[in-house]
Length: 247
Image 1 (tube, rainbow, N blue to C red):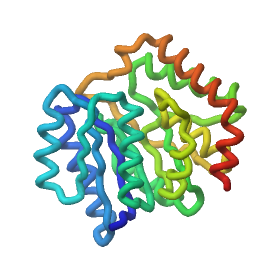
Image 2 (image 1 turned 135 degrees about the horizontal axis):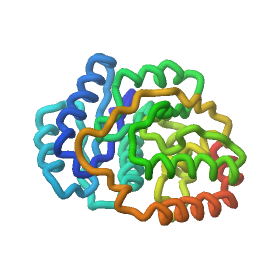
Image 3 (image 1 turned 60 degrees about the vertical axis):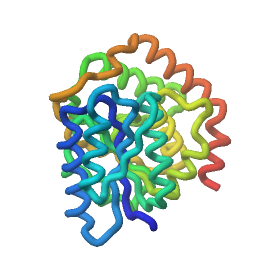
Image 4 (image 1 turned 120 degrees about the vertical axis):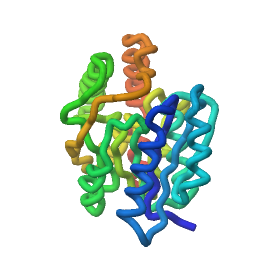
């Protein structure tokens, strides 16, 4: 069986909103694509609360929900494993979003409508409701990518992206090893450098009403320095990887 669209959604300690978010996106899929095979893939990243219990319950009730429970590996690792699962399911398109209820499904069409124009389409949080730490990191990364790679991406790490399955397979084959802290950034850079129009489409970003922001537990400068080192090291490999993607 193949799928027209798989939505990849990492989840960690989201017991207060996971049911709402899962029902929102699975109902959206059923309404938007009533005659096509689609699924929401939730990667439970070793949650310590009741997220897994709730997901296992929902899985038995919702036909277009796929749940993968894994040991905690961080947001980036959960996203990568979600992409791998989507490719394993032969997904023609892969959409990635988060489980924290900060995005709205109505914005999906803004990306979907441009799928014939690009194989990799990004949204960007025009008005972003996040802690100052996250806003700083985003600005830091935007400047780093511009300086190191000579390319400008509004929101390279945004969890609101639509990717053609065949193109995602090429990108995943070129993802740096060891796995980077924020793989979505590297996928965006490779996509842009290989000639894709990312569009940077403005989308809605809501206040977080539940859960905790895990990135706050990291020291701000450690995150920035680690990301900068990974991006700088990747610069030496980028040209060969872009050639492989274009081939």
